[in-house]
Structures are given as structure tokens and as C-alpha cells.
Length: 336
Image (tube, rainbow, N blue to C red; front, side, top):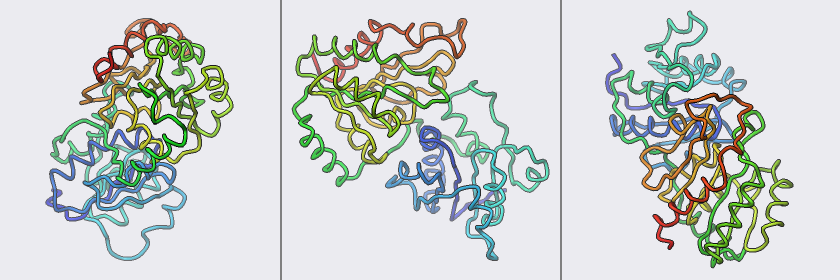
């Protein structure tokens, strides 16, 4: 029914993590139809994480309010469009600009009738989010081409990251460990306590006295993170206000990483760097953890599979548990 598309549009307007979790689906499309030009439209604040991926032709931005006004000229620019999410305005836009549209089943039955394929979603958290995103391409008969998330650092970005390390006097820290200590307010139950991160860092320094810590923070987290940096003392710095691309380039220069389950941890999962993701029992590794990662030492909450709610504290994941896992990760990365 779909044929061989020469131009493909993918619309995925969501958070950092869900934007990246769809990159295996994009890679699969590119492998199945290598001659097709694939364009992705993403959230204006997230699209940059997709820039420079070799299997994409173009990356742009779209918002549902703006989508209502777009694509009103006659003719359809794309042979095929895939739409993630349930924003009717985005699906309507895709229907205006593409000959065939594939999307998850929408609430509007009339909209579903206009889709080439209306794909059923899995029950929430019943499968890994990567496999959830792959459902749209599997519906087209397209098989996965790997499950690893994708983020591409350019040589220029690598050079800027190394220059920033020198400026911060972090270039000689060994091991150099990245931390992401806060997710976002609506899912703050996923956050490991700051005092646990502090004790973890002290134990690392006792084992590796030359260790340095780079703490990645959003603009709203600066004050909270600054206190942790001050208590740790040099070499420890916070990086706040960097673009997603600049932060990703810095992550690629780490020796190891420990972070809560949030967007930057998904970026970290694209690099072959030892990492310890910390996952709450409501949102375990089996749903959001790195896939096909050679140095993944992530941890699930000890109540996984048992009594668990948003009130279940991440502090039940002890410093001993995380430190032991981080030691394993560092040893695997070449530190003794």
C-alpha cells in the first residue's frame, strides 16, 4: 500500500527523551529506504538533538498552534508521513502535506479514517519506549536497524567541549564523572537525594583522589546544584544554560556518568561511556533504560516488581548500591 517513498516526513513534538527514543525508528526508515529523503519536525526546544544525524536529510521545528496555518498550498510535498503523539493539529498538517500518513490511533474517529494506517499503542509502560516508537515503522513492514539511541557530535563541537574543559580546569581530572541530579518537577519522585550524590562523590574521591565532577543543570536548578558544588570543592563544576548540543559534546568527554532518569541521561546513552542511570520502580530500566549500550551499569529501584508508588523514595536505592555499580563501570572503562 505504501510503495517506495522518495520523501518521508516524521513529526515528533515532545520532550528530549522521547525525541531521542524515536531515533531507532528513524534509522530503521533510512535503512529500509536508503534513497528517501527523511525530514523530521520536532519541538523548537528539542530539535537540535537530531541535528547532524547521518540518516536524516533535514531537521526542522513545528508547534501545534503554528501547524494549523501550515501546509495550505496545493500539492503534497511528501510521499509518506509518520506522526507521533495525539495532537490533531499535527496529524491534520501531515494529511495536508503527505500522500499517506501513519499515526497512532487518535481520539477522533474521523481523523483515523483519513489515515493510511492507524496504529495501536501498547499499554503505558508495558514495553520499552524504543519499541513503542518502532510500532509506527513496524506497521509499514520496516524492521529495526538497531535499538541504540542516536546523537552526533561534530568535530567542531568536540573541539569546543575540550576547550571548555581546559577553561574549567577539568581537563586533568581523572576520572571525570558527569552527574545529572534533577529531572523535572512533574516527575520529581525519580530524583535521588542530593545528599546521596554528595556522599557518592566523597566515596569516589576516597578511591580515586584525582576525580572531578561535572554536574549538568537546567536554568532552574542552578542554585540547588551550586550548593552541592560548593560542598564538594574543586575539581567540581556545574554546567547550566548550555545548549543541548554543547551539553552532549561535554558528555562525550566524560569517563563515567551517574544520572537520574531524564533527557540528558538519554543523550548520555548514545556514547560509549560507562554510565549508571538511576531508575524509579514506576519507570524502570525495562521501559527507559539504554538499549544496545556496551557499558550500561544502570540500576533499578530495589522495590521493582513490588509495592511501588510515586511516594516510594529513591533514597531506598542506597549509596552503597550506586557506588558499587559506579566502581564496576569505572573498572570496565579502564580505571583500577
